[in-house]
Amino acid sequence: MTDNTTAANTMWGGRFAAGPDAIMEAINASIGYDKRLYAQDIRGSRAHAAMLAAQGIIGDKDAEAIGEGLLTVLSEIEAGDFAFRTDLEDIHMNVEARLKEIIGEPAGRLHTARSRNDQVATDFRLWVRDQIDAAIGGIEALQKAFLAQAEAGADWVMPGFTHLQSAQPVTWGHHMLAYVEMLGRDAGRFRDARARMNECPLGAAALAGTSFPIDRHATAEALGFDRPSANSLDAVADRDFALEFLSAASICAMHLSRFAEELVIWSSAQFRFVRLSDGFSTGSSIMPQKRNPDAAELLRAKVGRILGATVALFTVMKGLPLAYSKDMQEDKEQVFDAADNLMLGLAAMTGMVRDMHGNRKILEEAAGAGFSTATDLADWLVRELGLPFRDAHHVTGSLVALAEKKGCDLADLSLKELQTGHEGITQDLYSVLGVHNSVASRRSYGGTAPDNVRAQTARWKEILK
Ligand code: ARG
View 1 (cartoon, rainbow, N blue to C red):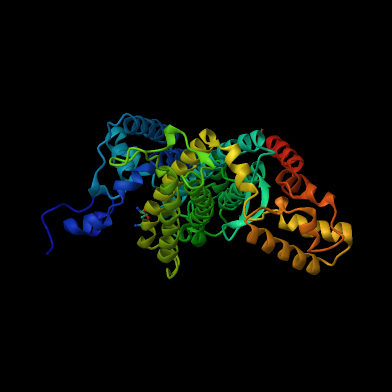
View 2: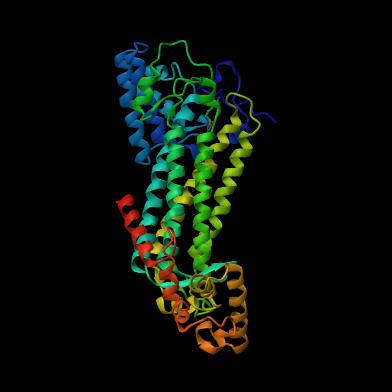
């Protein structure tokens, strides 16, 4: 059913006798969310108007009125005094319509030599670019929190796991620095994406460029882009910059999720490796003893949401013929939601890591469990007795079995018992069975030794300073 009673759209309704059906208006409008682009939209429009005047395409007085009027619109929006209208579809037309109310006729000259297609592509890039900078800032803050932990516990020992089974002792600092490395690559991915996306679509107009003598280099520069995009179709038709942002956000969120999972495990009564601060724990309404790691659990879940946004936008884009299609209006909510949740997640993780208390004693006790220095024993047989590693592995396995049968640790076996594995074993072997000696010996580049941790911590502090 068409509602023919409304008036045709004032911005593009010249060829229409009647306005859109209410349902049409509802499905078409993006103002409900793209109002978040208001600052970028106004910034882009001001650059465009100034360029049009500099090129003699519009008069200086008109450009001045437009520039001033746009600042008025900006302050109205910022003050919460702006009535966003769904019938005006999106932020671009809401701003322009209000500009017209404020300055009258010159407002109609702003849209010369541009289209909403290059306008939205420009606004959205500016927005994503800001988010990239914010994400990098958030990542660096989190890296600093991990670094502080690494510095405090450079030589604390804890179990290193594979298959979540005790594998070999590692240092607390080494574990913290593993996340500093991951986050460093996350920041790098955002930087790479930023460098690639930093081309300005403005002036590509609807899809083919324009016959007006515009200066795209000037607007690109005014908006902080490295250059104008070289192909007008590509400029308005692609959203790979948003997909790169989402992909980088997904990988980063995946990293956050892994540490979140470790926190859930580590803070449990069975592990007690860490105590989360009161500020980042929650209680249970029925079980008074509970300290739940809700923030960590939510962080573990956020990756689902952020990756979901990535898949959603990929799916929107995958079959679109060039150039612009309205499908692309569906890009923004995904990116907004992913960005909001990534930023919140980074802040929450930073708070948790900054405040968490590593339980040094329990970590150390756990470090030796599960015959975690068995590899050190095998390495000793290779180093001191010249056994091939495979034979050393076999001998060590038999000693582990013996200790297991006796219900003791490797270090609790007598020398005589150790010699049942190999007669050449001497008292010296005991020195490698302790967890501190074990980690201290792993000095290979990138290994877990406390000295390595201190060197890497110093390197990262220099990078992040
Ligand atoms: N609101 C639109 C979007 O977000 C702006 C571009 C509209 N372009 C058009 N040809 N209808 O994509």
